[in-house]
Image 1 (cartoon, helix red, strand yellow):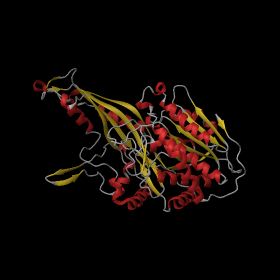
Image 2: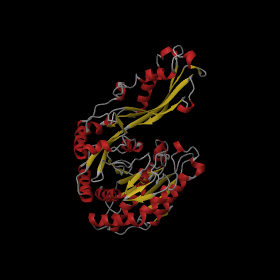
Image 3: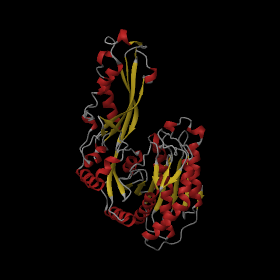
Image 4: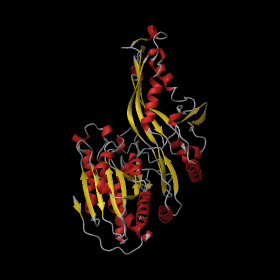
Length: 489
């Protein structure tokens, strides 16, 4: 679609201060405004918009970002919107190497599809109405993950502005991530020859423990989901006549779920869902907990109330910060939807014929999602109480990921980037979210280093109301990415 001029011969090492000032100016002059317009586009992921192709919002988001990238005149750029039949589009860019001896590739990743609106937004905010306030850009997709292509290109521009040599760079900006990235693997196959030999993958779709330092993601949970349904009748009946004789579908469902989860502690029971936590991750969790302190458990909007005149607050399941940070290494269960219930105000004295719930399982990084679903299905469906009709419909899943050991060049580059751009050492977190690309890339490029980072810090509330991008942190993260890319082989 677009090719720019060949870059001149690079000569300089990166001046971190100059790069930070350049990046700050670019964000202030252009990126905040461009991101604001992107927020206005309701580009919901296909899982939340079955008519995404006809509605055209995903295409509109891709075109919006494409126009901005093309306007930046990045030296050595080639940019394409790649389309496979029946798939969401993918924005792919290539930037030629300016380091003569470099034979490897840096891959940058982000996504443009969004979660649905959700309820509970502040009265003066909304998912599709951007608002920039006190360094925070509010709106759906601002931090998850619309900023990513802008940050990636800004990092490259910072290098080229100083004539700093860099390896070949490619960008993968997909549009089905919030649906579990079902379209990504076909694109990786289709673009195999254009990806090159990836030495470093920079994923800009993760979180941060605070806004004071560079945070790297060391692991990602896997996920699996399905619908559990218990049916006992063909139609609802009078509860006065039937209760005590006809088993309650809800009670049967609750009994069946007790096979999967200890309802008193929340611990999942099947051994197949657990793994051994690496000692390195335990040590990193302890170090990060020491940094975050009590703030770690204050990031959630806990319910507060009064009882007997005393203030109360819901308590976390983890007793310590380090244990909370190790949560991604333990399986967990959430019931995220239910069917078969009338609204409370509409309920009659009726014994309902069935109860169905949507189950979301989060899995430790090494646990295979397919095997986990098979084990759960067998566990839930076997030997149903009262011979009730119990079914578990699997909806699929994604495997987690654990970061490889850092090579010397990467460890040095990360330390330098955090110190130069944040004035503090780098810190490490395991994340509860799933980014399917990471496992796929690691399997294909076994020697690649993975810089998984992002702007989803305290209260940024991705997927929920009042999502915001912390712009000062995004600026410094952009500069950190430039610093690491400059050091890549």
